[in-house]
Amino acid sequence: MLLRVVLEVVCAAVFAAATANDSSDRNADFLAWLAANGATHPPVILKDFEDYGKGVLAVQPVKHGDMLMDVPADIILSRGTLVASAHRPAYLTSELLSQLQNDEDVLAVVLAREKLLGMCP
Image 1 (tube, rainbow, N blue to C red):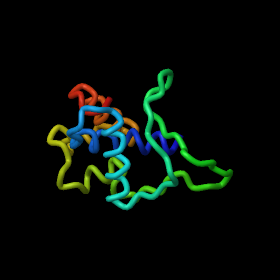
Image 2 (image 1 turned 45 degrees about the vertical axis):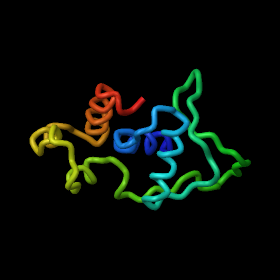
Image 3 (image 1 turned 180 degrees about the vertical axis):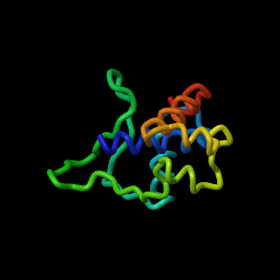
């Protein structure tokens, strides 16, 4: 669940910058962006699953207790990183952020807006 949340959280920022039209290229760009920003993970690919949407597929066996992904806190989209960011979207005013009760509400607003813009499949 945490990995899915992390992927959804960062997807708005990454896919907004992606220029490739092909989903597999965007998926590879996303993993490259994660690595360039300090995230580590075992050999995985991002895949569009027919019944589930985007997900992570291990390309080698994963054992119980293996870390699936380590993502630096400063690249995870949250209320804290948005407030601290010089690149906060203009629509996320301090007034709006004060009205949103928890991080889930903030993420819902950001992801819904990006989805409407077509940036995040």
